[in-house]
Length: 532
Image (tube, rainbow, N blue to C red; front, side, top):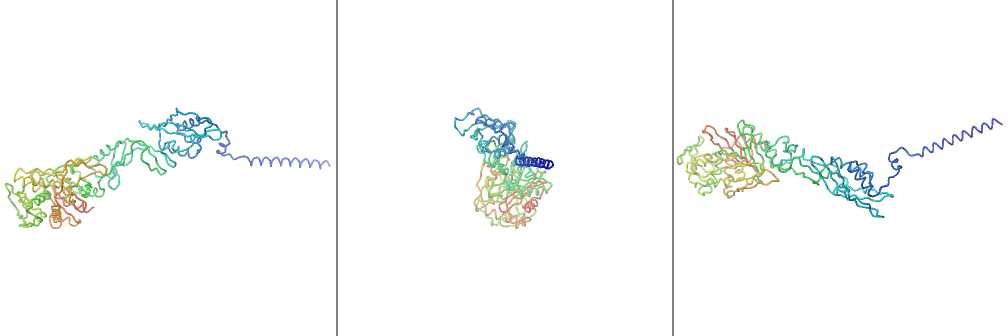
């Protein structure tokens, strides 16, 4: 009997212990997990007045504490994420929120607008200040900031950020194809690799620097991919676009670099006036001689002499004229390059570059005939192209017959630039006056313009210039397509040395090639045309 009662007590105690264990286990199972969000939810909620929550939010904003500011809003996750993006994008040294006008809303109000001013200080004297407004709303006996991106800046929207930009690494100048020519560095525009038009880089850098300060900065809105909008504040200049063509410039540079003596090529697009290439080799110097230095043009000037002859109306391109090997005109004896053609059409004398023919024809013209003809081809024009100095040529009126004869074959006092002869070729190709330009965005100022020869003269010049390549002195270029042009040799100094020229066009590409102290102009031109 006693043993039976003892066993009952053991069973009761054990049952009680089991009950307690089960109860404890149940309580443990019902307790919440150790989750930060649940802890935050379980934590006592701080109740703020409208002014207090606005103050705390702006304090956190000024401290660049996105999380602390975000938790004071009605959308903590969105606010924290976007504020964090803004602080990272702007990288300010300090942010000041001026909230001197904050006041408590009227009794019973559920919303209130709180104006404030933000001042972002980016250092180095860079500051950005603007007014904004935040809205506070009543929520559960407290107040919170109503989150909207516009309180950071009125133009900021969801999914976007603010970024502090500068010009470092950005394009300062692009070529006509959009590739960088110059990029911004701390001390100004620097050449991008591979270099384009080395002889013009310094000039283009000066123009770019004049359009924007290398230390310029700006604030812009950026999307999630980092693409920037137009600046909200500051200056973010668009890169300038040069008219230079990278393929043509590279081809021209390789061509002039192929000869040891000074050489240069200038190429112009007749339809637009775009400068497509300005190339010269090291032997021609560091300054852009191709655009401004003047040289005797030799027989390339016969384009102008032919224009004057045709304008006189006595001779056409098929008129038969004499081409002796030697001719004395006035007091000047003129020689051909060891040939005589007899009586031939003017076009043949042009193609074969017969000095005696053109000297005799020019002797009968007025003293102003050659300057007038040259001016109609652009050799008296004056242009102001931003960043570069240009000279076309100098063709003075002859003092007498001897000078007229010398001028007619590109000797005497006639002098032109490579740029000027390229302009002559472009005028013939286009049939109208051409205004050269180096920039898409910047205009060329025409100080002295010109009017091209009449269409009948242009047609005649085109025919004769084509003959030069098909049957004249420039036949080596016939394999490069429908090339028109004129060869030239200009004696310099004591007459023992000479410069070689070729001026012409193919399609919408006009050009002039000058090789100093050499006879390689046709060869260099062939290398250029063969590469394009």
